[in-house]
Length: 153
Image (cartoon, rainbow, N blue to C red):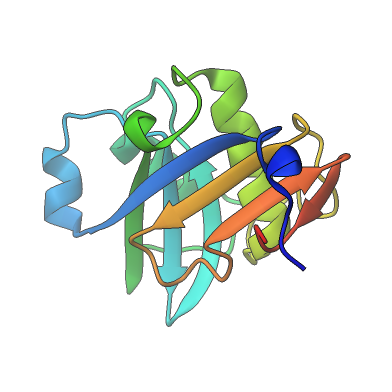
């Protein structure tokens, strides 16, 4: 059953464009990205945010955390940025990035995240659409009446 227009119009839509980066490319990034993904042997390990931080530092800090089962060998990295031209939000904010990250985690179940794994605690009527990364199981996710959905239909 398709979502009615009236319901669809309630959503704040966030479009995230992902790009795969090599270790060398990561060193050269001077642009601030909002999110990152860590993938190993075809499995999504971690979804993180890097809002107002350099994404390279956030990735390195995550890898070097002692409580996660992640090492840099064989790790594939993606960086993501909110595309304001294709989103209904008019600016990037810490609140929007935090809520989008939480919704991505609760609907994609990366193995090494420890926050937002069991429930969603962010804003209601948020829809996150992702492109550029095949490792996100759910390309479009949403929350309505504080319940996360693994589809946008």
